[in-house]
Length: 505
Figure 1 (tube, rainbow, N blue to C red):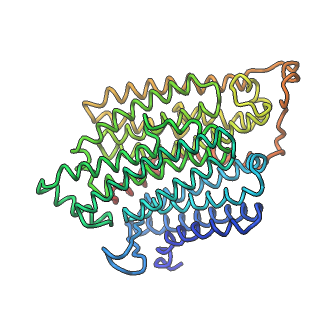
Figure 2 (figure 1 turned 120 degrees about the vertical axis):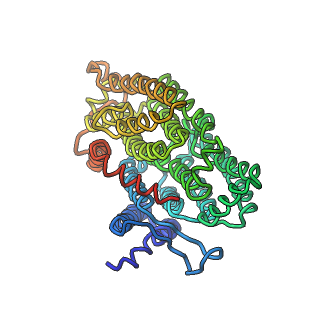
Figure 3 (figure 1 turned 60 degrees about the horizontal axis):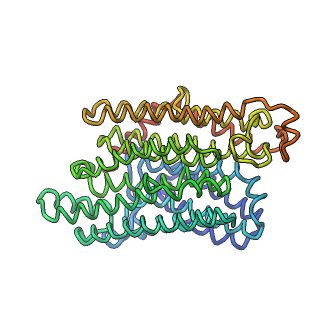
Protein backbone atom coordinates (compact mmCIF):
# COMPACT_ATOMS: atom_id res chain seq x y z
CA UNK A 1 0.00 0.00 0.00
CA UNK A 2 1.17 3.51 -0.80
CA UNK A 3 2.58 4.98 2.40
CA UNK A 4 1.55 8.49 1.36
CA UNK A 5 -2.02 7.24 1.14
CA UNK A 6 -1.80 5.74 4.63
CA UNK A 7 -0.95 9.22 5.92
CA UNK A 8 -4.53 10.22 5.08
CA UNK A 9 -6.05 7.61 7.37
CA UNK A 10 -6.22 9.71 10.59
CA UNK A 11 -8.30 12.33 8.76
CA UNK A 12 -10.41 9.57 7.17
CA UNK A 13 -11.10 8.18 10.67
CA UNK A 14 -12.40 11.54 11.92
CA UNK A 15 -14.53 12.18 8.83
CA UNK A 16 -15.93 8.63 8.75
CA UNK A 17 -17.04 8.73 12.38
CA UNK A 18 -18.47 12.23 12.00
CA UNK A 19 -20.64 11.35 9.01
CA UNK A 20 -21.69 7.94 10.33
CA UNK A 21 -23.48 9.68 13.23
CA UNK A 22 -26.16 11.45 11.17
CA UNK A 23 -26.44 8.38 8.93
CA UNK A 24 -27.47 6.30 11.94
CA UNK A 25 -30.56 8.47 12.41
CA UNK A 26 -32.15 7.35 9.14
CA UNK A 27 -31.44 3.65 9.64
CA UNK A 28 -33.30 1.07 11.65
CA UNK A 29 -31.95 0.20 15.08
CA UNK A 30 -30.42 -3.05 13.81
CA UNK A 31 -28.76 -1.43 10.79
CA UNK A 32 -27.51 1.47 12.92
CA UNK A 33 -25.95 -1.03 15.32
CA UNK A 34 -24.23 -2.85 12.44
CA UNK A 35 -23.02 0.46 11.00
CA UNK A 36 -21.59 1.47 14.37
CA UNK A 37 -19.60 -1.76 14.75
CA UNK A 38 -18.40 -1.53 11.13
CA UNK A 39 -17.23 2.06 11.66
CA UNK A 40 -15.36 1.17 14.85
CA UNK A 41 -13.75 -1.78 13.07
CA UNK A 42 -12.77 0.33 10.06
CA UNK A 43 -11.25 3.03 12.26
CA UNK A 44 -9.38 0.36 14.22
CA UNK A 45 -7.95 -1.18 11.04
CA UNK A 46 -6.87 2.20 9.68
CA UNK A 47 -5.28 3.06 13.05
CA UNK A 48 -3.38 -0.25 12.97
CA UNK A 49 -2.04 0.49 9.49
CA UNK A 50 -0.98 3.98 10.59
CA UNK A 51 0.75 2.48 13.64
CA UNK A 52 2.65 0.00 11.47
CA UNK A 53 3.69 2.77 9.08
CA UNK A 54 5.02 5.16 11.74
CA UNK A 55 6.80 2.34 13.56
CA UNK A 56 8.48 1.24 10.31
CA UNK A 57 9.47 4.80 9.43
CA UNK A 58 10.74 5.43 12.94
CA UNK A 59 9.25 8.89 13.20
CA UNK A 60 6.15 11.03 13.10
CA UNK A 61 4.54 13.19 10.46
CA UNK A 62 2.32 16.26 10.16
CA UNK A 63 -0.71 16.14 7.87
CA UNK A 64 -1.86 19.56 6.66
CA UNK A 65 -5.57 19.60 5.86
CA UNK A 66 -6.37 21.46 2.66
CA UNK A 67 -2.62 21.84 2.03
CA UNK A 68 -2.61 25.34 3.50
CA UNK A 69 0.42 26.05 5.71
CA UNK A 70 0.25 27.52 9.20
CA UNK A 71 -1.15 29.75 10.53
CA UNK A 72 -4.11 29.47 8.10
CA UNK A 73 -4.22 25.70 7.75
CA UNK A 74 -5.20 23.06 10.28
CA UNK A 75 -2.88 20.20 11.13
CA UNK A 76 -2.97 16.63 12.32
CA UNK A 77 0.16 15.24 13.92
CA UNK A 78 0.68 11.48 13.94
CA UNK A 79 3.27 9.51 15.87
CA UNK A 80 3.54 6.03 17.42
CA UNK A 81 1.79 7.01 20.66
CA UNK A 82 -1.15 8.69 18.89
CA UNK A 83 -1.67 5.78 16.49
CA UNK A 84 -1.40 3.20 19.27
CA UNK A 85 -3.83 5.11 21.49
CA UNK A 86 -6.35 5.41 18.64
CA UNK A 87 -6.13 1.66 17.98
CA UNK A 88 -6.49 0.86 21.68
CA UNK A 89 -9.51 3.12 22.08
CA UNK A 90 -11.21 1.40 19.11
CA UNK A 91 -10.61 -2.03 20.66
CA UNK A 92 -12.10 -0.97 23.99
CA UNK A 93 -15.10 0.72 22.36
CA UNK A 94 -15.82 -2.28 20.12
CA UNK A 95 -15.74 -4.73 23.03
CA UNK A 96 -17.80 -2.40 25.24
CA UNK A 97 -20.49 -2.04 22.56
CA UNK A 98 -20.67 -5.78 21.92
CA UNK A 99 -20.62 -6.61 25.65
CA UNK A 100 -23.52 -4.24 26.40
CA UNK A 101 -25.66 -5.08 23.35
CA UNK A 102 -28.07 -7.37 25.20
CA UNK A 103 -28.74 -4.85 27.97
CA UNK A 104 -29.16 -1.98 25.51
CA UNK A 105 -31.81 -3.95 23.67
CA UNK A 106 -33.64 -4.61 26.93
CA UNK A 107 -33.29 -1.17 28.52
CA UNK A 108 -33.57 1.27 25.62
CA UNK A 109 -36.66 2.08 23.63
CA UNK A 110 -36.21 0.95 20.05
CA UNK A 111 -37.07 4.42 18.79
CA UNK A 112 -34.14 5.87 20.77
CA UNK A 113 -31.56 3.25 19.92
CA UNK A 114 -30.60 5.11 16.73
CA UNK A 115 -29.85 8.22 18.78
CA UNK A 116 -27.58 6.18 21.00
CA UNK A 117 -25.44 5.13 18.03
CA UNK A 118 -25.30 8.74 16.84
CA UNK A 119 -23.82 9.66 20.22
CA UNK A 120 -21.34 6.76 20.16
CA UNK A 121 -20.12 7.60 16.65
CA UNK A 122 -19.69 11.28 17.51
CA UNK A 123 -17.92 10.32 20.74
CA UNK A 124 -15.45 8.16 18.83
CA UNK A 125 -14.90 10.99 16.36
CA UNK A 126 -14.09 13.40 19.17
CA UNK A 127 -11.70 10.96 20.83
CA UNK A 128 -9.80 10.33 17.58
CA UNK A 129 -9.64 14.09 16.92
CA UNK A 130 -8.32 14.82 20.43
CA UNK A 131 -5.61 12.21 19.90
CA UNK A 132 -4.45 13.50 16.51
CA UNK A 133 -5.14 17.24 16.35
CA UNK A 134 -2.27 19.71 16.42
CA UNK A 135 -4.57 22.71 16.83
CA UNK A 136 -5.83 23.93 20.20
CA UNK A 137 -9.10 25.42 19.00
CA UNK A 138 -9.93 22.27 17.02
CA UNK A 139 -9.25 20.36 20.23
CA UNK A 140 -11.73 22.59 22.08
CA UNK A 141 -14.42 22.02 19.44
CA UNK A 142 -14.10 18.26 19.78
CA UNK A 143 -14.00 18.54 23.58
CA UNK A 144 -17.49 20.02 23.32
CA UNK A 145 -18.63 17.29 20.92
CA UNK A 146 -17.27 14.77 23.40
CA UNK A 147 -19.20 16.40 26.25
CA UNK A 148 -22.53 16.49 24.42
CA UNK A 149 -22.15 12.91 23.19
CA UNK A 150 -21.27 11.59 26.63
CA UNK A 151 -24.20 13.45 28.20
CA UNK A 152 -26.56 11.93 25.64
CA UNK A 153 -25.23 8.45 26.36
CA UNK A 154 -25.93 8.94 30.06
CA UNK A 155 -29.48 10.28 29.78
CA UNK A 156 -30.65 8.00 26.94
CA UNK A 157 -31.96 5.54 29.53
CA UNK A 158 -34.52 8.17 30.65
CA UNK A 159 -34.73 7.30 34.34
CA UNK A 160 -34.68 9.72 37.26
CA UNK A 161 -31.16 8.75 38.25
CA UNK A 162 -29.73 9.11 34.75
CA UNK A 163 -31.41 12.48 34.12
CA UNK A 164 -30.01 13.83 37.37
CA UNK A 165 -26.58 12.36 36.61
CA UNK A 166 -26.60 13.84 33.10
CA UNK A 167 -27.52 17.27 34.47
CA UNK A 168 -24.72 17.19 37.02
CA UNK A 169 -22.30 15.93 34.37
CA UNK A 170 -23.28 18.73 31.98
CA UNK A 171 -22.88 21.43 34.65
CA UNK A 172 -19.42 20.23 35.68
CA UNK A 173 -18.33 19.64 32.08
CA UNK A 174 -19.44 23.10 30.95
CA UNK A 175 -17.51 24.62 33.85
CA UNK A 176 -14.42 22.72 32.76
CA UNK A 177 -14.97 23.64 29.10
CA UNK A 178 -15.34 27.32 29.98
CA UNK A 179 -12.07 27.36 31.89
CA UNK A 180 -10.33 25.52 29.05
CA UNK A 181 -11.63 28.03 26.50
CA UNK A 182 -10.53 30.97 28.66
CA UNK A 183 -7.05 29.46 28.91
CA UNK A 184 -6.87 28.97 25.14
CA UNK A 185 -8.00 32.58 24.56
CA UNK A 186 -5.37 33.93 26.96
CA UNK A 187 -2.71 31.79 25.31
CA UNK A 188 -3.79 32.98 21.86
CA UNK A 189 -3.58 36.57 23.05
CA UNK A 190 -0.02 35.98 24.26
CA UNK A 191 1.28 34.01 21.28
CA UNK A 192 -1.00 34.84 18.33
CA UNK A 193 -1.17 31.17 17.35
CA UNK A 194 -3.49 28.19 17.73
CA UNK A 195 -1.25 25.47 16.25
CA UNK A 196 0.48 23.66 19.10
CA UNK A 197 4.00 23.70 17.63
CA UNK A 198 3.81 27.45 16.89
CA UNK A 199 2.52 28.19 20.37
CA UNK A 200 5.42 26.29 21.90
CA UNK A 201 7.96 28.43 20.05
CA UNK A 202 6.33 31.62 21.35
CA UNK A 203 6.01 30.24 24.88
CA UNK A 204 9.71 29.36 24.87
CA UNK A 205 10.52 32.94 23.88
CA UNK A 206 8.25 34.30 26.63
CA UNK A 207 9.89 32.02 29.20
CA UNK A 208 13.37 33.01 28.05
CA UNK A 209 12.72 36.75 28.36
CA UNK A 210 10.62 36.52 31.50
CA UNK A 211 7.94 38.80 30.07
CA UNK A 212 4.25 38.03 30.52
CA UNK A 213 5.10 35.25 32.96
CA UNK A 214 2.01 35.81 35.12
CA UNK A 215 -0.50 35.80 32.22
CA UNK A 216 1.17 32.67 30.84
CA UNK A 217 0.79 30.88 34.16
CA UNK A 218 -2.86 31.98 34.37
CA UNK A 219 -3.51 30.52 30.91
CA UNK A 220 -1.77 27.26 31.79
CA UNK A 221 -3.59 27.04 35.12
CA UNK A 222 -7.00 27.60 33.51
CA UNK A 223 -6.42 24.88 30.93
CA UNK A 224 -5.13 22.43 33.52
CA UNK A 225 -8.01 23.02 35.93
CA UNK A 226 -10.56 22.84 33.11
CA UNK A 227 -9.31 19.45 31.92
CA UNK A 228 -8.95 18.20 35.50
CA UNK A 229 -12.63 19.00 36.11
CA UNK A 230 -13.67 17.25 32.91
CA UNK A 231 -11.63 14.15 33.71
CA UNK A 232 -13.13 13.92 37.24
CA UNK A 233 -10.03 14.56 39.31
CA UNK A 234 -10.88 14.77 43.03
CA UNK A 235 -12.67 16.90 44.25
CA UNK A 236 -14.42 17.49 40.90
CA UNK A 237 -15.80 13.95 40.74
CA UNK A 238 -19.29 14.41 42.20
CA UNK A 239 -21.02 13.63 38.88
CA UNK A 240 -19.12 10.41 38.27
CA UNK A 241 -20.67 7.75 40.58
CA UNK A 242 -24.25 8.32 39.37
CA UNK A 243 -23.22 8.72 35.72
CA UNK A 244 -21.35 5.43 35.72
CA UNK A 245 -23.61 3.67 38.20
CA UNK A 246 -27.01 4.15 36.54
CA UNK A 247 -26.32 4.44 32.80
CA UNK A 248 -26.33 1.49 30.42
CA UNK A 249 -23.46 -0.98 30.63
CA UNK A 250 -21.94 0.18 27.34
CA UNK A 251 -22.16 3.82 28.43
CA UNK A 252 -20.53 3.11 31.80
CA UNK A 253 -17.75 1.08 30.18
CA UNK A 254 -17.02 3.70 27.52
CA UNK A 255 -17.33 6.71 29.84
CA UNK A 256 -15.04 5.25 32.49
CA UNK A 257 -12.48 3.82 30.08
CA UNK A 258 -12.29 6.35 27.27
CA UNK A 259 -14.00 9.72 27.78
CA UNK A 260 -11.92 10.97 30.69
CA UNK A 261 -8.80 9.50 29.05
CA UNK A 262 -9.34 11.64 25.96
CA UNK A 263 -9.17 14.77 28.12
CA UNK A 264 -6.10 13.46 29.92
CA UNK A 265 -4.37 12.72 26.61
CA UNK A 266 -5.06 16.29 25.52
CA UNK A 267 -3.54 17.50 28.79
CA UNK A 268 -0.38 15.49 28.07
CA UNK A 269 -0.16 17.15 24.65
CA UNK A 270 -0.50 20.56 26.30
CA UNK A 271 2.31 19.66 28.71
CA UNK A 272 4.74 18.59 26.01
CA UNK A 273 3.66 20.11 22.70
CA UNK A 274 2.10 23.42 23.71
CA UNK A 275 3.86 24.70 26.84
CA UNK A 276 6.91 22.49 27.27
CA UNK A 277 7.31 20.00 30.10
CA UNK A 278 10.22 21.90 31.69
CA UNK A 279 8.09 25.04 31.96
CA UNK A 280 5.21 23.01 33.43
CA UNK A 281 7.52 21.52 36.06
CA UNK A 282 9.03 24.90 36.95
CA UNK A 283 5.54 26.39 37.36
CA UNK A 284 4.83 24.03 40.30
CA UNK A 285 1.43 23.11 38.79
CA UNK A 286 2.53 19.50 38.96
CA UNK A 287 2.75 19.77 42.76
CA UNK A 288 -0.95 20.62 42.85
CA UNK A 289 -1.70 17.60 40.65
CA UNK A 290 0.43 15.43 42.94
CA UNK A 291 -1.51 16.44 46.06
CA UNK A 292 -4.96 16.10 44.51
CA UNK A 293 -3.96 12.88 42.77
CA UNK A 294 -3.05 11.22 46.06
CA UNK A 295 -6.18 12.66 47.69
CA UNK A 296 -8.26 11.16 44.88
CA UNK A 297 -6.58 7.78 45.33
CA UNK A 298 -7.48 7.73 49.01
CA UNK A 299 -10.97 9.23 48.81
CA UNK A 300 -12.02 7.13 45.84
CA UNK A 301 -10.82 3.92 47.45
CA UNK A 302 -12.44 4.69 50.82
CA UNK A 303 -15.74 5.60 49.14
CA UNK A 304 -15.64 2.39 47.09
CA UNK A 305 -15.00 0.36 50.26
CA UNK A 306 -18.13 1.86 51.87
CA UNK A 307 -20.34 1.32 48.81
CA UNK A 308 -22.96 -1.46 48.77
CA UNK A 309 -23.95 -1.10 45.09
CA UNK A 310 -21.52 -2.97 42.82
CA UNK A 311 -21.84 -0.48 39.94
CA UNK A 312 -21.22 2.53 42.21
CA UNK A 313 -18.33 0.67 43.86
CA UNK A 314 -16.66 0.28 40.47
CA UNK A 315 -17.44 3.93 39.69
CA UNK A 316 -15.78 5.19 42.89
CA UNK A 317 -12.81 3.00 42.01
CA UNK A 318 -12.48 5.09 38.84
CA UNK A 319 -12.05 8.20 41.01
CA UNK A 320 -9.07 6.49 42.62
CA UNK A 321 -7.62 5.43 39.26
CA UNK A 322 -7.84 8.98 37.91
CA UNK A 323 -5.92 9.96 41.04
CA UNK A 324 -3.15 7.51 40.09
CA UNK A 325 -2.80 9.17 36.69
CA UNK A 326 -2.55 12.69 38.10
CA UNK A 327 -0.15 11.52 40.80
CA UNK A 328 2.11 10.28 37.98
CA UNK A 329 1.94 13.73 36.38
CA UNK A 330 2.78 15.24 39.74
CA UNK A 331 6.08 13.37 39.94
CA UNK A 332 7.33 15.78 37.30
CA UNK A 333 9.36 13.30 35.26
CA UNK A 334 9.00 11.61 31.89
CA UNK A 335 8.92 8.26 33.68
CA UNK A 336 6.03 9.45 35.84
CA UNK A 337 4.07 10.55 32.75
CA UNK A 338 4.90 7.23 31.09
CA UNK A 339 3.51 5.38 34.11
CA UNK A 340 0.33 7.47 33.84
CA UNK A 341 0.01 6.62 30.14
CA UNK A 342 0.37 2.93 30.89
CA UNK A 343 -2.22 3.25 33.65
CA UNK A 344 -4.60 4.79 31.10
CA UNK A 345 -4.26 1.57 29.09
CA UNK A 346 -4.56 -0.66 32.14
CA UNK A 347 -7.58 1.15 33.53
CA UNK A 348 -9.37 1.20 30.17
CA UNK A 349 -8.90 -2.54 29.66
CA UNK A 350 -9.89 -3.41 33.22
CA UNK A 351 -12.73 -1.04 34.07
CA UNK A 352 -14.72 -1.97 30.96
CA UNK A 353 -14.32 -5.61 31.91
CA UNK A 354 -15.58 -4.91 35.43
CA UNK A 355 -18.69 -3.04 34.27
CA UNK A 356 -19.66 -5.67 31.68
CA UNK A 357 -19.06 -8.56 34.08
CA UNK A 358 -20.94 -6.79 36.89
CA UNK A 359 -23.94 -6.54 34.54
CA UNK A 360 -23.73 -10.30 34.01
CA UNK A 361 -23.66 -10.91 37.75
CA UNK A 362 -26.72 -8.70 38.21
CA UNK A 363 -28.59 -10.43 35.36
CA UNK A 364 -28.42 -13.81 37.08
CA UNK A 365 -29.43 -12.24 40.42
CA UNK A 366 -32.79 -10.72 39.54
CA UNK A 367 -31.09 -7.55 38.22
CA UNK A 368 -30.08 -6.63 41.77
CA UNK A 369 -26.96 -4.51 42.13
CA UNK A 370 -26.57 -4.62 45.90
CA UNK A 371 -23.60 -6.75 46.91
CA UNK A 372 -25.65 -8.70 49.45
CA UNK A 373 -28.03 -9.75 46.66
CA UNK A 374 -25.18 -11.10 44.52
CA UNK A 375 -24.28 -13.97 46.84
CA UNK A 376 -23.41 -17.00 44.71
CA UNK A 377 -23.66 -15.05 41.45
CA UNK A 378 -20.28 -16.40 40.34
CA UNK A 379 -21.79 -19.89 40.24
CA UNK A 380 -24.96 -18.79 38.46
CA UNK A 381 -22.96 -16.98 35.76
CA UNK A 382 -19.47 -18.56 35.66
CA UNK A 383 -18.05 -16.46 32.76
CA UNK A 384 -19.08 -13.20 34.43
CA UNK A 385 -17.73 -14.40 37.78
CA UNK A 386 -14.35 -15.34 36.31
CA UNK A 387 -14.16 -12.09 34.32
CA UNK A 388 -14.98 -9.98 37.38
CA UNK A 389 -12.33 -11.82 39.38
CA UNK A 390 -9.68 -11.10 36.73
CA UNK A 391 -10.68 -7.43 36.67
CA UNK A 392 -10.55 -7.25 40.46
CA UNK A 393 -7.08 -8.84 40.56
CA UNK A 394 -5.85 -6.41 37.92
CA UNK A 395 -7.13 -3.41 39.87
CA UNK A 396 -5.44 -4.72 43.00
CA UNK A 397 -2.15 -5.06 41.13
CA UNK A 398 -1.83 -8.84 41.10
CA UNK A 399 1.14 -10.09 39.01
CA UNK A 400 0.34 -11.31 35.47
CA UNK A 401 -2.25 -8.56 34.96
CA UNK A 402 -2.01 -4.99 33.66
CA UNK A 403 -2.55 -3.22 36.98
CA UNK A 404 0.61 -4.75 38.38
CA UNK A 405 2.77 -3.19 35.66
CA UNK A 406 1.37 0.30 36.05
CA UNK A 407 1.88 0.24 39.83
CA UNK A 408 5.46 -0.97 39.34
CA UNK A 409 6.06 1.89 36.91
CA UNK A 410 4.66 4.42 39.41
CA UNK A 411 6.96 3.04 42.12
CA UNK A 412 9.99 3.18 39.80
CA UNK A 413 9.18 6.77 38.83
CA UNK A 414 8.88 7.77 42.49
CA UNK A 415 12.22 6.27 43.55
CA UNK A 416 14.15 9.02 41.76
CA UNK A 417 12.14 11.80 43.47
CA UNK A 418 13.54 12.44 46.93
CA UNK A 419 10.72 14.70 48.16
CA UNK A 420 7.88 12.69 46.63
CA UNK A 421 9.13 9.12 46.95
CA UNK A 422 7.78 8.39 50.42
CA UNK A 423 4.29 9.92 49.90
CA UNK A 424 3.96 8.08 46.58
CA UNK A 425 4.97 4.69 47.96
CA UNK A 426 2.72 5.11 51.01
CA UNK A 427 -0.21 6.14 48.80
CA UNK A 428 0.38 3.15 46.50
CA UNK A 429 0.48 0.78 49.47
CA UNK A 430 -2.62 2.19 51.19
CA UNK A 431 -4.59 2.32 47.94
CA UNK A 432 -3.64 -1.28 47.17
CA UNK A 433 -4.79 -2.39 50.62
CA UNK A 434 -8.11 -0.59 50.12
CA UNK A 435 -8.42 -2.17 46.66
CA UNK A 436 -8.00 -5.58 48.24
CA UNK A 437 -10.67 -4.78 50.83
CA UNK A 438 -13.49 -3.82 48.48
CA UNK A 439 -12.67 -5.90 45.42
CA UNK A 440 -11.92 -9.10 47.30
CA UNK A 441 -15.05 -8.54 49.40
CA UNK A 442 -17.06 -8.52 46.18
CA UNK A 443 -15.27 -11.61 44.85
CA UNK A 444 -15.88 -13.49 48.10
CA UNK A 445 -19.57 -12.57 48.02
CA UNK A 446 -20.14 -13.76 44.45
CA UNK A 447 -18.38 -17.05 45.25
CA UNK A 448 -20.12 -17.65 48.57
CA UNK A 449 -22.49 -20.60 48.01
CA UNK A 450 -26.13 -19.77 48.56
CA UNK A 451 -28.61 -22.38 49.66
CA UNK A 452 -31.00 -23.49 46.96
CA UNK A 453 -33.97 -22.74 49.17
CA UNK A 454 -32.83 -19.18 49.63
CA UNK A 455 -32.30 -18.81 45.89
CA UNK A 456 -35.78 -20.09 45.19
CA UNK A 457 -37.25 -17.35 47.36
CA UNK A 458 -35.50 -14.63 45.40
CA UNK A 459 -37.39 -13.47 42.33
CA UNK A 460 -35.44 -13.55 39.11
CA UNK A 461 -32.48 -15.60 40.33
CA UNK A 462 -31.43 -18.04 37.60
CA UNK A 463 -28.41 -19.75 36.10
CA UNK A 464 -27.06 -18.25 32.88
CA UNK A 465 -26.24 -20.89 30.27
CA UNK A 466 -22.93 -20.61 28.44
CA UNK A 467 -24.67 -20.43 25.06
CA UNK A 468 -27.21 -17.82 26.16
CA UNK A 469 -24.97 -14.83 25.38
CA UNK A 470 -22.02 -16.14 23.34
CA UNK A 471 -21.03 -12.64 22.27
CA UNK A 472 -20.58 -11.58 25.90
CA UNK A 473 -18.42 -14.64 26.61
CA UNK A 474 -16.32 -13.61 23.60
CA UNK A 475 -15.98 -10.11 25.09
CA UNK A 476 -14.91 -11.54 28.46
CA UNK A 477 -12.24 -13.67 26.79
CA UNK A 478 -10.93 -10.70 24.78
CA UNK A 479 -10.76 -8.43 27.82
CA UNK A 480 -8.97 -11.07 29.88
CA UNK A 481 -6.47 -11.69 27.07
CA UNK A 482 -5.95 -7.93 26.75
CA UNK A 483 -5.18 -7.71 30.46
CA UNK A 484 -2.73 -10.59 30.17
CA UNK A 485 -1.03 -9.01 27.17
CA UNK A 486 -0.60 -5.73 29.06
CA UNK A 487 0.65 -7.66 32.09
CA UNK A 488 2.95 -10.19 30.44
CA UNK A 489 4.14 -8.31 27.34
CA UNK A 490 4.54 -4.87 28.85
CA UNK A 491 8.10 -4.18 27.73
CA UNK A 492 7.43 -3.56 24.01
CA UNK A 493 4.32 -1.54 24.87
CA UNK A 494 6.26 0.59 27.36
CA UNK A 495 9.01 1.12 24.79
CA UNK A 496 6.45 2.13 22.16
CA UNK A 497 4.79 4.61 24.52
CA UNK A 498 8.19 5.95 25.64
CA UNK A 499 9.32 6.46 22.04
CA UNK A 500 6.04 8.17 21.17
CA UNK A 501 6.22 10.42 24.24
CA UNK A 502 9.75 11.39 23.27
CA UNK A 503 8.43 12.65 19.92
CA UNK A 504 5.75 14.79 21.55
CA UNK A 505 8.05 17.76 21.97
